[in-house]
Amino acid sequence: MDDRADALRSLPSVDRLARAVARAEVEAARERILRGNGAAPAFDELVDGARERAQPSLRRVINATGVVVHTNLGRAPLAPAARAAVHGAAAGYANLELDLAAGTRGSRHDHVEALLCELTGAEAAIAVNNCAAATLLAVAALAGPVDPAAPPEVVVSRGQLIEIGGAFRIPDVVAQAGARLVEVGTTNRTRLDDYRAAIGPATAAILRAHPSNFRTVGFVAAVEIEELTGLGVPVIDDVGSGVLADDLALLADEPPVRRSVKAGAALVAFSGDKLLGGPQAGLLVGRREAIDACRRHPLARAVRIDKLSLAALEATLRLYRDPEHAVREIPVLAMLTADPGELERRAREIAQAVGGRVVTAAGRVGGGALPLLELSGPVVALDAGERGPDALAAALRAADPPVLARIRDDAVLLDPRTVAPDETSALVAAVKGSFTPSVQ
Ligand SMILES: *Cc1c(COP(=O)(O)O)cnc(C)c1O
Image (cartoon, rainbow, N blue to C red):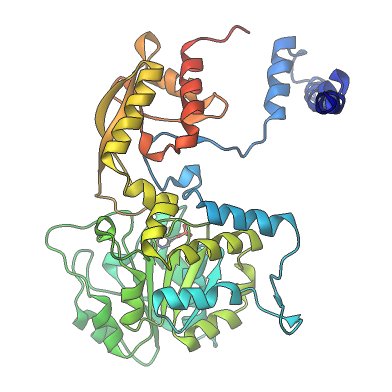
């Protein structure tokens, strides 16, 4: 009884609640009128505007697209251990840059360096903000100019002058780092001799970039990492998606980090939130002196990782110590290897609840990884009827929480692979709500 009384007392007054969301909306309308931009908005419009303001802009959404590493939806959901680590680091202070034993200043890089070395076989490691930053830092640290009149050269195959997305292009990265790009080979074929012929006194590094989001097929040839590292020039290997679970057959078409380290690459760069399944981060592992050069470079400070990401990264990496456990606990890996029978059961459950049909469709890995891999599986098809699939998909996006689906032909598809089991009831409620037009 007392609990209820307390709860009732802690409710805000109608007036306070209304003020909190309505003041800014009315103020904005006043300004528009004073600037001469039209008449007063209708009451309903103001209510809708106030509702919108009451919602945070960045929100949890339900990913029913079947695209596992969906960049627009924040890439990798975190494992329970990583979520707990973020919570711990966010709730109070942390020994981010403190050596607890000595009580003196420490380095934020120390929290994951040993783990990264243990998992990849590298001598040294550093984590930064994302893989784009890691690649830029790697090139700047190994090939940044000492004398601007004589920029060091970075050799890149013409088959690897790639664009990752968001205007992140390898030729621009090399230019930004202050180095001079030397292109070798052709779009489809580059041989070891092409590299050999390009190497000279000004060569600072060879940069290899994995064509993450496309594949060339047919009359093609590229040089393996083991051959490149035999040329006597430091090799920077940007492998992109970051496969640490290299015994998973499904991921066999992406370059494993350990292989590049073993081959002797000076620096291997990869993402924290693609196939690694952790937070946004860029990892660099490799030779001690190359990592030290990265740590000393002024860009390292500009692209440093924050404590929340670092907490999530450490917890995610720890899971990889037991690979079988990692596949179960890391959501990206669990979704990629989901049991077909279990997916079928969940698809039926959703279909029955919302009145959809179970059909087979192909999902994708996404996030610029394994572009050819189709994750075929059972999905729920919703017949959009008169209003069409675009309107139904829009209604699902307007639900709370928003649901993201994909459209095939005239149906809206819901893929259980990327929907967490504890999201199923919210998904069902959103679909039911979007079929019954709400009375305003
Ligand atoms: C995705 C990718 C990047 C960029 O990684 P972010 O973590 O998104 O910054 C760089 N290089 C390659 C080869 C990639 O696939």
